[in-house]
Length: 284
Image 1 (cartoon, helix red, strand yellow):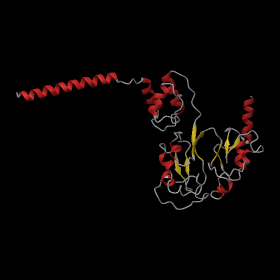
Image 2: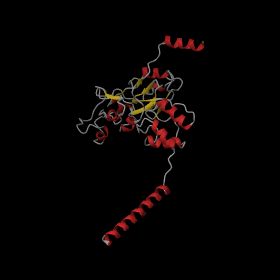
Image 3: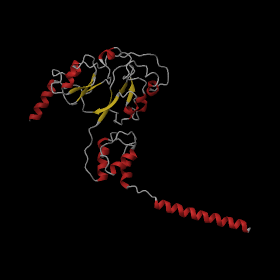
Image 4: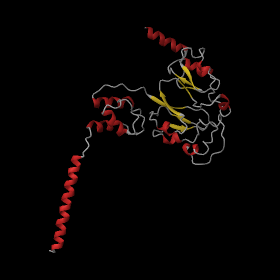
């Protein structure tokens, strides 16, 4: 055998052994310990990676919840079932968070809101926003191109004939993706127990609002008067009313008295007879 060939084989073999030993040492020296509970928690999460928990993804949430940096009930898509499983893994008790649902805080569709121009560009709300602030004359209103609908991983939204997104509440998991997708900030998560919400986010004054939309809130302040909300369920913040008590029956009165019809009723008001029956049952 050629001595040169033999020496080359020996040198290469030696280098291989050296590098292998170095890698083995490095794998031990720099090994990162992963708590088995992190993998267990990750296995029970829905894998939506939506960020509703406040973390960049399910893996980050699993690590944070095992470390005690975040509560075990922050996974909106998983709901009470996932909360119970995480609590069992960690050996703790945890109450499910108040379930939420996505809502559209704008009613200014094709029939109610004015457009500045005809947009024929990319059918994406963020792209349209970069072209003169979008076609919608209201700088706060829905652009109607359905980016939030396409982003929803649960098919819980669709666009109606009026050019507005509609949430299918039965399918909504409150994953927050539609909220982060909307460049106008009209999507929001509210408690499922909330009866009424304000479907407008415009901060403009009355004249500006009325000139571009027939259903926009123009800060008339009727809904915050003692005659409408005597217990202070609604307060003004700038040019917009803010609901302070989501369970107040006064919200139904605000809905009825609002001259611009800016409020939306999610949960129909119980009939007086039903209310009376419930009162009797409680007394018994």
